[in-house]
Image 1 (cartoon, rainbow, N blue to C red):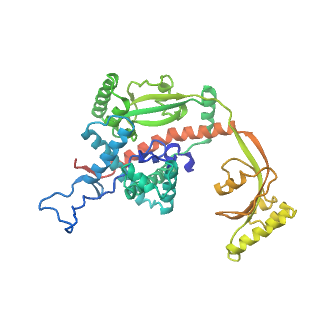
Image 2: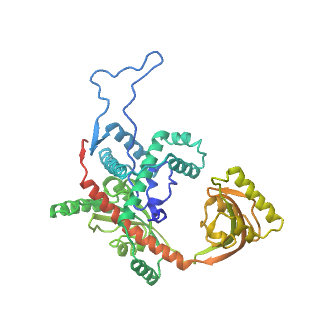
Length: 459
């Protein structure tokens, strides 16, 4: 499964420092466990580090997850951080014991997922983390060198932020793997979705939705159902009495987006869980539903906002051709650069581009076509190539430039506007099915993972 299909989980790594948990794509992933250790012993200018007084408790265990522990100091740090994030969204934090439970549940889920990733051999390189940090820095309009100070100004320790970010990328990769293994979309499903979208006449409408989930275990007993029903009824009464929905989600929801006020983002009707869609599409912005029962538990959903549009999708395509010279065992970097420069001088002198491409280009696919790449959609080539190509006028030839594939010369032959509405509808139909099914797959997988884990709470 291509990572680009992960709408929310794939999102983006363009998180604000106020919400590290935004790294996960479809239903969102829980915050990573903190990595801070026990408090450091006090020091002053005239004494070496003083040992703690006899009998002083340095730390305690908050929870045990299989063969790992979550320390109380880790939990306290994460609770304080989460409280700041909730207040930054202008939402009232829940009671301290409720917030502590929500945060600890999220940390337990994260530990379980990280353990599962380790068992599967999933890891993240330093380069991947650095690229994510660069995007975060760019998103916050600071340089990568300035990022540590910027994070400090927001109350974050850089080393821990980096560690948390690595964990979130690992979890994202793990969930991608799970979806790749367990989520399959047939051509029939795709055709049916496209017909449904076309028949609705409103397939462009998007709904900004939040939910509160009162979860039930797999194969719940009648007592489990009754207890969940009682809890959700109490929450519903609080909402009807005026309790803020986001605050109630933070306090009571057992969904993965609880600490984000239950916000699950923008969805088309076709991307919503089947039970929700007919209800949400009839709601007005600001409304919340009666409790809805599913296999996962009881849900209360709120429609935050509605966005409608029905426009053609037009893209600018570029017709281009290129010549590629790669380095090899017999052609080092300097020689490759000298060769591409020689070809460039020949082209400037009037040499035939197609003949030189056929004779010298190291791109076997296009060389047979005289270097012709055909009509290219935006994003069809690597960014370094697109950056040069997009600046050229039709007929214009680029000087030699380098990408990860080698040295190139590119010439733009033409540009045109292409109506890709049908292709866009097919892509969106696929994404709708993927978004709808991925939440169900991940939720069920996590439930099974927790059922098979040893979890012991000490708080």
